[in-house]
Image 1 (tube, rainbow, N blue to C red):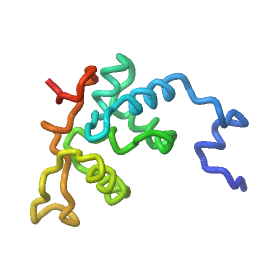
Image 2 (image 1 turned 180 degrees about the vertical axis):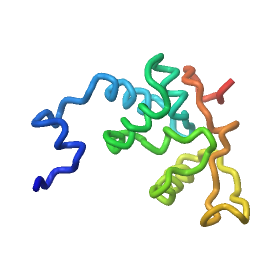
Image 3 (image 1 turned 90 degrees about the vertical axis):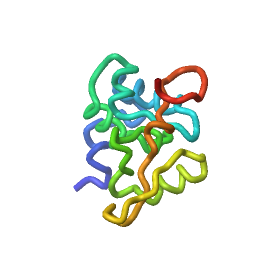
Length: 128
């Protein structure tokens, strides 16, 4: 049995070569300013290719080398399994958050999407 992860096994010796779509998704993730976020759907729309699920798949396989916490779910819920790591990044970058309701699992805040969402413009103003 291989010591490599399934993602590495599927690349058969091409560890340094990403699929072109994955490279493009990761490039967009790197453009997002600190303290701002884009949804999976926003990234797909920016690229004019794929959809939220395809972007999510790329982020799950290859996103560890980019600011992954800036590509998020549209509802502002923190990425399951990575909530505390993402929250630390959001707090360090000053990303707008909403207080968690008492019914929220673990009482974790959510992203304030109205204020945190970035539309890909040259400034850091919010999504319009």
